[in-house]
Image (cartoon, rainbow, N blue to C red; front, side, top):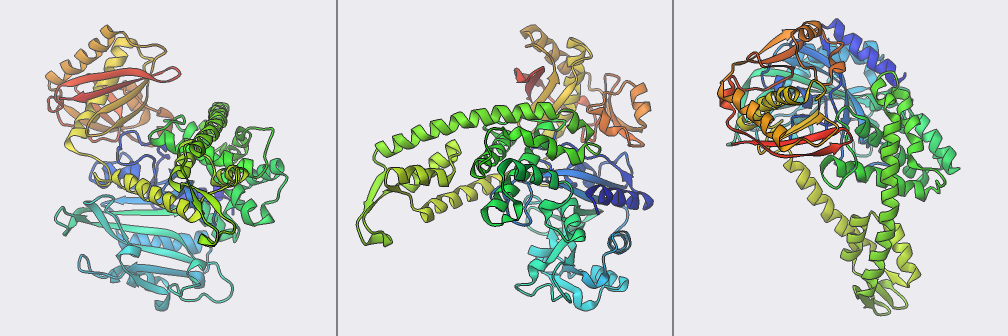
Length: 604
């Protein structure tokens, strides 16, 4: 079964269950400062999980493009992917456990034709915060899952959320498929756990974790499900996830360029997986509707790391005489129908990767100079004969300094080791790995900090800035003309960042005029409300449709009206009157990319 067939089956199935099929949101969240990338189908739906009205109704389904970067260093094994697609269906206060579980079972056994004897499920075992989820277990048993293959596991295994310290959360029930030989063994058996592959997860958001640590029942109970496309295809076909239809053209191209075979196992297979995964992820990040370029901060830093890591492993495989960008076409070919907009901009994606590769080659030269400087500055200790299992004596380089070169210049450890060996020097791999572990812990702690606001930061201040962004958009059009289309935005509790189409720098007079218009509309205390309209109705009303193409297949969209001044398709949240916003101030106007300017603003 192909990825396209899985997507189609899933969406058609839930259409029949009265779900509205919604398009994939951007990989780069526009108004959610809690995450760098869209990591799950639920992220773009946070306002609706929290009670906003969705234009598609109370039941929606989608195939969401996702990026997860917490385990980049683990990519290369059998399961970790950076970019992947997530199938999902949601209920916003509508159906509950019985329908969700029945439909999951029906899709797995009827549509995908997975044999019941190879399925197992897990449910929440209960603790002092919430009772055992016997309800889910009883539903599974009534559908034909034997009692002995229904497992009750603790919160660490069968509970979702909250994303931060507080917010919506609840028990989940997970579905597993036996990929081993012979009769399925118990799910919890040590060596056999890896043969049970999790393929679907139904989350039941029924609690709100309070600041005091207690759990209170939610007024609106939601269902949030997730099934990875790549993993499901791999399981159904019984094949390596890196050899499914969406990866195979990439792997074949890498084999051709390197002269090596994927089946060679060992480091060759791992290197090919890393290159394929990272190039594919980089292409989707760059080509996204809110696409970005490599940089040293935020999403740009993650992108830079992906590209440079792929280059290092391409060098390791001996791929020479061509740039990494040659892999963009085979990476995007399997998505040319599903993601036509990505395929159209593939030349721009190649240019970005070529530029980053050229920069990296220069950086490697600088890294070599820094290595020479480090050696010359005496960061070396002599290990006498017989100590540390070294015979004869060796000169050991400070592992902290060696890691600095690795981290700052992207110098692979193997290259550092090789250059040091030429000079009869040594770096202790265990000590170097310890520095790497410290860095990973810091990175994960920093990433976790992105979630302190909960599912997403929909605080009063971000809500005020969100409405201010609508006023800003219309004010820019008033001053610069209709071509000042929004190209992206990012809002935190501290500031608003707004990107728009403009080929030149704004004059001080234009900036002041835009600021004055926004503040004028705030003083007017205009009412804010939304209406559910068809796309044609929204257009005829003069609503601004940011990235309008993604709404084309939706029956209705949510249009927010700010008095008679601003009309824009948006998911919310917003203030009820503009007077709640406060004083609007533009703090900076700068270039974002070619033909795109960026405004930073705050409210006082």
